[in-house]
Length: 316
Ligand SMILES: [Zn+2]
Image 1 (tube, rainbow, N blue to C red):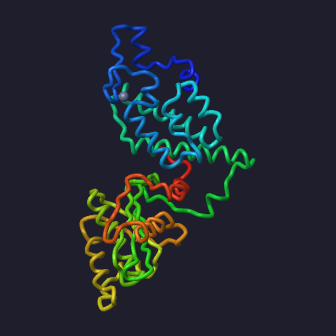
Image 2 (spheres, rainbow, N blue to C red):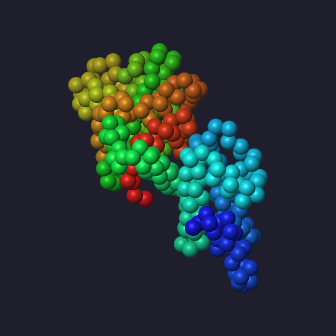
Image 3 (tube, protein in one colour):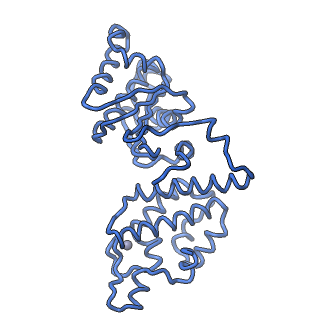
């Protein structure tokens, strides 16, 4: 219905309403452009173009022509998008739907959604739609896939931090991690490059960095998930490891854990920790010596891993 109205140019955007009711102000409520046309809502409003740019970074099909997307007429573009691959069609339709919702929230509820929220909502729906379609195509109503590999979101009211280290040598080491909310959605991620004496030291440095990032966001209940079982034991009983090589690094991390918040530590298999694992590899191999990168959106190279971690029935 939305697409139908869009093609026929009769969506109730500011411009159309103003033509029917001259006293109606056609202004865009999101960016205050003087006239809100259909193309403004879905493409030209800074909020919408930022959304598409973010989406293209992650999901544009191979050979996708950015120029024709941004410069063709609305009808041409719609035809282009709808004749493209199934995946792109799904992305496009779900994207349009979320832009329309975001616009309506601004107009009717006076709520400006952050790009991050629109994108996360889009992503959950897109992923869900795709799973549904693939399930239908395979003629099955249940997916065994979802039980073979399971990252689970944290308990209600908690955030979850997954961290990992990546180590080859003292000067070829790094760490990474991601914090997600109880719906499994990306909040912040990092990749860091540092010197570390051993793989375990790299793990600890990654945990420390991750905890500091989360602490700075004023989170009060955190689940820390790591794939090194020995470290979990050390962090839970630091006194027993005082004279260990890693004694200082352990007490550093423990002093952060003991601040005024609740941190529970969990051990998971490496395959379940794969988003953090990839961030750590990125920290070791792609980040400049001694530097850190923060990611407010999942980086393209691990987007699929992040996506498959999102629970299917997440309610927004
Ligand atoms: Zn606008």
